[in-house]
Image (cartoon, rainbow, N blue to C red; front, side, top):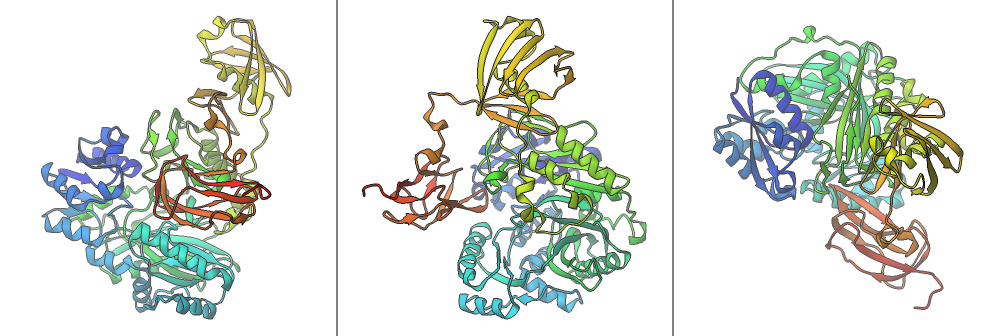
Length: 639
């Protein structure tokens, strides 16, 4: 076994690997960018080495710097985590050439599966079913459009490199193909440095079911399946194991195909074989097809660990150090059910737009596995993926595990940035999901229901008002005067002190009797949730989480951009395209520009009709958050 390894990554996956290394007595070396100097993974590691600036290309993608750090700290091996260099075969070659061990598959195996078109051809040879489509070398736009016509709409345009939904577009009609192709190519080029795409038939009721495989270079086993069908913008939201409705026949067929795929390339280490399943007629052994193989540890690996009792990182270390697989196929048990929800800093209502901010409050409920790379006070940086945590629950049955997930999400507390927490909780309560009737279009189909935010009741308004006045507790009796007016978000209230630890809060929904006992507020005789004041706002946590802004009335930046007709950059990024010019007339919802940020393309649209008065940016410009990009004026305004 290794004495010391370097982890060539950041955030929660680095913390996750360190946890296992500590248990096994393996020392760890972290690397960090200028933006991550105070990060949790840096504090957890035995040693840490600074490798460059905040942009990934200047730090976490600098293979030479990472290898130099490993050699300088006398690490024997490098664990790549996921993302960044984890599936870069050239980096693997560099690692082995430096006399170090790469904790993962060989460069040859990664190359065999690294491009989706070549991987599909290889899988066909291995007898693994593949999705109908075009994955040839001709990348002429007209030829690809013809291939889509031949396959039949709807089709899916997919980048041959990478994953995570980047460079992927669904196209429902021929007239939308050219624009979708151009957008997919731009995003693929930016994310992977490779604009090549393939075309696949889009399955009508698709389920995304993947199989965890593990090999030692000589043989391979599967550790059952995960269902990852709950997706938005082709990115996973909630994953579970095993797949609901899975039959023994389909499990045997998919598991066997996944093992054949791994053995076909002499696979060593953890990998995932992803399949698309047509669930329109139930789960059948003749209705699944290979999509791609991820030659690394997956983000959702904890659900497999929960149902098998296997530490996949420990297996990675053992196999990379030369040991054989710890278990044979018949020894791999499947027990209970598990879920994982991905908690992100993102604005669901704005189309799942990634967000930034400083986490002023972060609490996970006891008894729940929460994999995170951040702590209270940490900032969600614009440079990296905005994941806050993965929340994992396990139970003897699917229903039990799902109820535990709902409780865990309702009891998780996050403040300081907008998150998808309420959306995740609503998704966990979705009746179709509870029944196991899932497919990759569920979120898009029921988005309005899932994003419907219930109006705050009197209890919530009272707690928000109390928190907005300042610290709640010992200072309560020191307020002066005895009655104060307070505004929070679009609401107002009057707080009147009646006695120590006793107040009446008059809200638009009537008076609320509030008493503080044992560190908790009781409103109208019932225990209430928790309210937290933080920079710029107040958050009230409970079954439904509510956030209220506290704006400085003298700060003009607090005004909505829509009031001025100015389109602002929602985050730092690169302007990829501008679609309007001065004098153009636009309608509400028309595309104005495309901003690339946090590894994704974001289309900025007009929030009202008008005439373009100014274009303040251009394609190729790097802009900061809040930068004015386009200004509209009323359509009948003088030019």
